[in-house]
Image 1 (cartoon, one colour):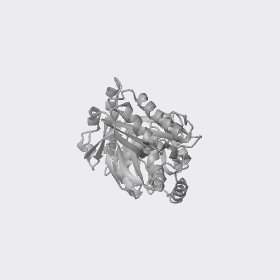
Image 2: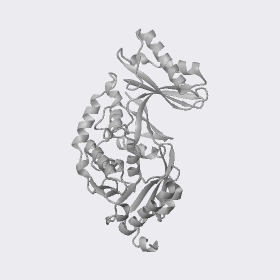
Image 3: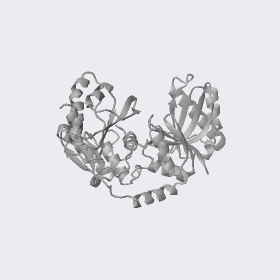
Image 4: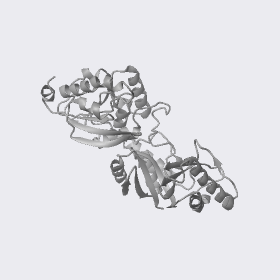
Length: 381
């Protein structure tokens, strides 16, 4: 059975996600913030397990024009929920997008829920229970101008929830975006990696998962595993194959930070991800960066200075980072996720590539700076 699917992602990562799907043998078409594709249940299972940049994998149910409540209700009622829901199943409706008729997205969710309940009463004689936090079946309603679409969320928790970081811990970079940065930088696990300001270690952990060919979803469960109509045995097979194919990284992966507390969190995350033995952690000031082998991918997410008064304090940090890299990392490439263009100028290097991304709601640029021999002397330091 072939399903129509959508994998969602952060804006700017669509082409990377498309390439990931192609590696799984799936052809797709990118659209803003997502990739549409056709897949079997086996491919849906492998997508959830393997996709590093996807946030969710959705299965299409229905779509149509929508000018208001009645059309939305009729569309939702037309779905054969009786083939998807069982008596003990719990449901929830999540709304994405915008529509002039539904300024209150909670109202739109209630319309879909009412249609679902009415259809189940008519065809099965019972009313499904609602569980907003952990439903068996999460329905996603996507609204856009004059139209709407309904999907089933096969992932459950967002795929960024790899299982190696407590969800109450707020990281400045999501796991999916960190993996996307590595893939955009051309990382394939064969070159050395250094994050000189690693913080809680998300980039380093994602690099180790990628280099060791470890699927990002190997330590978590997915919503579709609860569904009697989904072929869940494919997931068990895919997990077994993936773990048998793990390997040791071909080059060093190093996380470095001045804050011991950050390094403690990073080590804890790496251990939970099963990659602690594959990475090296160093405590040190960015100004005291040791010699970096040529060909190293130096990649980091420096602070942006968004809050009032922070920008002036960070000018020196950006200059120190640029000077340290010019002095110690000739023949390497520095990649920075930059949320503040004024601070970017303090690095003192010329970017050869700039890619627009979003870190949450914040528009950023992911910039590549080649470091050539003699750059530090030329900079006049």
